[in-house]
Length: 316
Image (cartoon, rainbow, N blue to C red; front, side):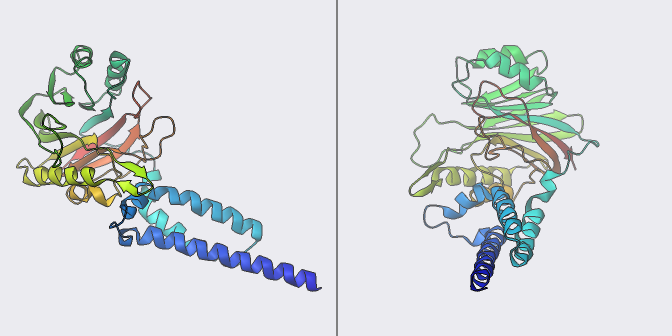
């Protein structure tokens, strides 16, 4: 009898631990903006992988069922509700209704050994616009030649470019170079696409890379570049704006708030794009002003270490 009582108390204690972990997971989801970024950009690090807390919830659910803990199961309602509120809509199937534009965004990699095959794969998605990053001089003529039949208009500034089925004008460099970066670092452009539904200011950008180390997330250069890009978007006179780029951050990452506070992000689709071998996050983004990103999806892999993403957009 004593042994049975000890066993029951042990199960009950374990149930309470699981319940506590469930509540802590829910708190992290609900209050992720309150996690300080002052040391190691821990807030941004959490937000970069925030949807993956869903895996923690599933694991806790399995353990709660194995322990037959009603307390833990009840506590799990909190993180489940918060996760569903934050990310549940992204699980919905892509909107099959009307849309105005299809755009493709891809970091093609400066080590891509098959630029022609990459270009053909991107064109096969039937987009109106294709934004590319990490364009190198040796590969640029290949992209130009391969895409020209379907995309007669294109603009390149530095290592980023835009190919379009519609005429382009007013193209200029967008200076998003953080302080201390050497001259010649050019990763932003702005142009106007004259579509059948009206003019759209199209931005293509490649923000600086981030690194995860023992000191946390090294994202200061990325964050500084995002501020500069956000200022350009805020000053844009054309009402409709589409931003496509490798932003080296997720839509939840506060480091991209200068952009996400001004632009709408995808309503459906996770489209995890990096790294290609085991995608953990969508750092390849499509955002719009005066419009909606109806859905976003990944395309088949290319010679890049990123997966391409395609988005359907409705303009206001």
